[in-house]
Image (cartoon, rainbow, N blue to C red; front, top):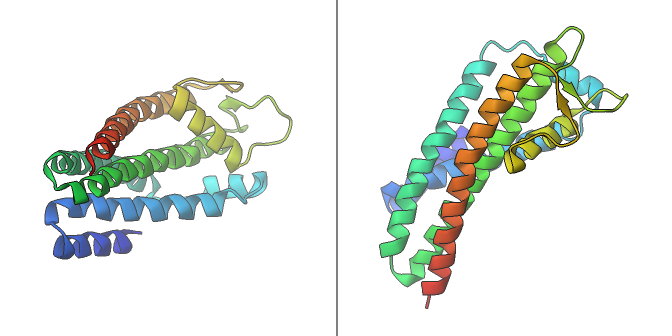
Length: 201
């Protein structure tokens, strides 16, 4: 993931301009991460989800923190691209606007996939497992946690699930705040893209 992102950023620096390299590099890295995590976890059943979510990896929390911070910092790179899109020639304006929107959208999805895993970790680490009532008898799998994560990411609230522990509630609070930040980034990027389309020759 990181190797491809760095390579894409360096290539952008040589072929275009260096100030666009961070956005391009992060877009490639986030896209690969999103595809990799979803392809791996969406096929897991409940037992595989529990085993994977509770694997003891001492670097897990640090990795998640750094990834979240990188996703937030990527918004600054997107801001640079959006500013350049307003002054770029019409032939490049649309591409820059699309890059800004794509980078934010991929970062937004990364945040939800990180919290999907975080919710599964909290749920299956509890003894007995819990923290979310899914209103079903079958134990939850990753796709159930993805449903929760995307619900918080889009409407900032629970739907037909119930949060039943303080630790889970704290995680959903952080997730909701991050989702709100990225939703505004997506809105700004979408407006920028529409303006670029309107001004394109």
